[in-house]
Image (tube, rainbow, N blue to C red; front, side):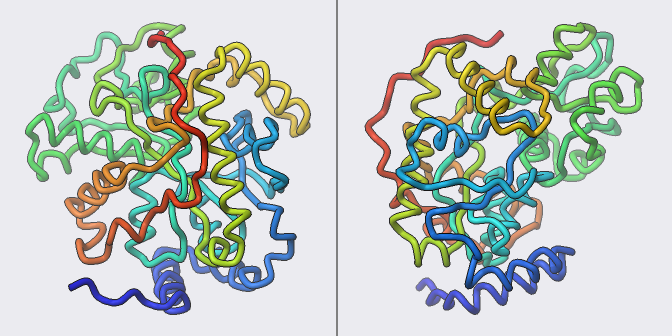
Length: 353
């Protein structure tokens, strides 16, 4: 029998205890003071962005799909885990991260729930694990004793690496001999070319620019490894969902409509719109990354969440010993109830460059 769910205030205490152990107590503590009052109207949602990027939420607002809601940018995030921690702490009203990070936070009893997928992997949007063209690394076994650089440890890239090693038959002891290093994405290609690392995880503009320069080859990529799948979700705090369900519905539905619009609209038109958005917000951002945008990669119409997109990473975290099986009940982690986006639209045709 499933144990009774803890009241929200107890779940929050558990989460705060977790943040204290993981060095996040300061973020959570500042959020506590804002959690009750928020300091903004219910129809204003605070969020963090990414430099040189238009997120699905920002696109939804520009398209007029948020049904009267307003987004308030409070700064740029440093990573997906930090972004959802800010939402859990009350510093923002939604945040997005890799689904493995969402599951891990749920295991810590964070008072948040995943409400819509916002990025994924498809033939146009994927991360590749690249080596130098003349590298002796050809197989997963060749990675033993080698250094693999990625943007964040314990997130999307490391999950892909672990999956690749496991599918190739490496046991946990052998996989542990593959060294994982966190490097800022803008420095990863240079580190590879200088021989400081053996494998570089590259995606989007950094991948395409590196390929244009030549001299590298892909060992594997996450699309060839797992196919098309939604990889990350936006989460919202339980307190926001409980107090403002109509606003939550408008937000989630609007983001779903924006994702579908990006699928059925010619890429050139999507990019042109994104360029206008970035220019209008006037944050001194480089527009060049937008030229390389191809897809958000979300697998299902309207960004709806499939249980398997979370259970896959729950099992990965359990194998790593990061969470215990009894700490996660998947139906409590996500909901599609706020997503009223229209019926599926046909995916824009395209092929991998």
